[in-house]
Image (tube, rainbow, N blue to C red):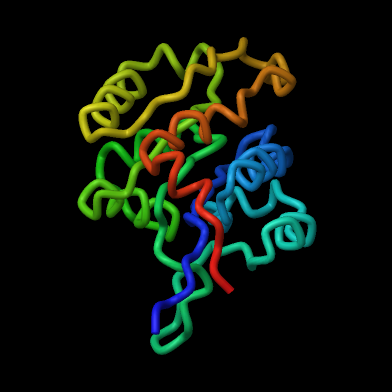
Length: 188
């Protein structure tokens, strides 16, 4: 007997940035294109989310901490990962190989597991000018991470939330999965 086919599963990693509360826009874009979605928040990012709304929209609990030994996995393995919004801190720690929280550990593992990953950084222009940040983006690109096009906003400007390209993460990742996988009907 064959197992029912499942939708491709997208992990959405959310960091502590002012636009994080709009992550539902990314979830909607992914679901409309055939993805099932689970959200992993950095420990600080969790406070930027309406957890009940995100869990209602995805049908899955938000993850922010490691499972206890023997605890069931709340998500299937990731077919792809979108990091949005990605903060200066997360981009730099990820590129340097720090895995001091669940989100970073998953991101550090992703290249070694062949999981396609896209990042939509959300930083101001002063932070974006920092040499470490520029090196980190280059390092992530060398690892095969797909980098979004968001242009840094002015410091203390409120951040340009209206122009944050949530759906771009799905645009970047869709070719890595293939339209056939996203369009395939699910078996009962």
